[in-house]
Length: 295
Image (cartoon, rainbow, N blue to C red):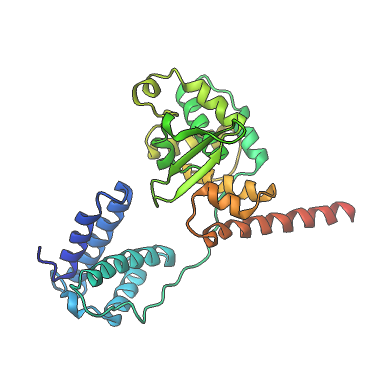
């Protein structure tokens, strides 16, 4: 395969990664290929770029293009550049490239606010009654993620074979995470067990062996918006907020960060530490309210 140009190299990376990274991640690599193709044709007026001519200046100019012409925010740009970096490092490993153009390049991100639900808000969702079976299904799937910290993609493929009996007879989810292939282990709390029980005779569960029936991620998020309206929770919620909520609520209930990290399937405890900022903010609010009441 000829991979002497940048776009060819990105396509070669995509073709070689399909068996080990998710469909969603593949789409993100296809997206950066389109963005770079647009940059080359619109700004440099060329159809492709020689791989061995890549340097710091090219990366910096491309970053400026994403900021000024495409109005991408710093974190989107950083994600795109990191994916490009993965492609370039693949080319270095294959010895298609001899020098790393990323040596002098420094990434830059800005802190983002992670939306989470506290226990009171989760209780509100639990109490929501609806005659609409789809709302019930989305509610239960979302709550199951709040109780286990699973992502949507992990829930979607969660199978009866992923539940094991641990020491003491407790049931535990043991999986390799879909996104990172990292091992994670989550004890099943009673509320999660009740949801499994509720759907065990559900047609798609009987057919596939998957534990919880799920809609597409997009449909789930649409229904979650409706659930927020029905429960009067004024927050923008997606499936992934369940995972964030599990992490912050676990830390706020004094579960050691090492345990939370293992349950989330993080390869590095630094990833889990992101959630400690949220709990620090929560602690500050509690402290402030306490003194306000005392005053």
